Image (cartoon, rainbow, N blue to C red; front, side):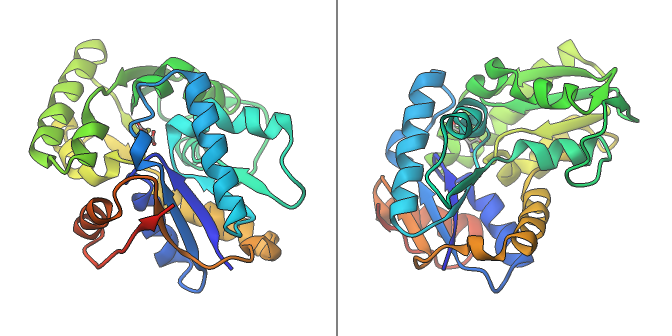
Length: 269
Ligand code: DGL
């Protein structure tokens, strides 16, 4: 029995880590489409096709529930996959909603009309594809009014993390935060809208300054998954857990081991 966690690469490990610590008795099947990462520089059709085929592979490995722990895939593919209809007994969930509910101080699943919230100026850091989808702004508009969102498309960060070049990744974070601040000098909150970015959360926080509240998805998604599994306990699938990649298992295992600080062994998807 395993719940599927999907990302283009290593970023979803930030969600997996939080989910494993929140739900220690649940098995997880992690799937990284490393051979095709990064997704964030691809067009929406391409991201949709790649996400759909990876999720189908996860279903065939025994997952019933797959979390798209990838904002880029959630933005380009989630709604379309749901609208086109999923096979019986299968579900796909994304990562935007728990984060936006936290930022707008809503309880899980509170669908009341949009209202004024405390935070008025929000910086969004995400991949180019997520920014151009405007999916965050759309989900936010369902829940809050009067919030000014300034988005920064953070080219290069995902590639640097996948290559294990954290010095370059940190330099890119500082330059993207500077670019954002030229457009919005005093954000009150910042959203790390890519699951790779929590690996650099302290760098974002330093560059933004201590007064900016930084929201990232790991714990929020883990909490909403716990809530979902309590209401749908039969959605834990039939297959075994494990770590799969479409890339080079040895290389991906080394990076994952470095990020999670425990031995992780990927196998070929
Ligand atoms: N972790 C993915 C996300 O949350 C990265 C996407 C990419 O591969 O560019 O958007």
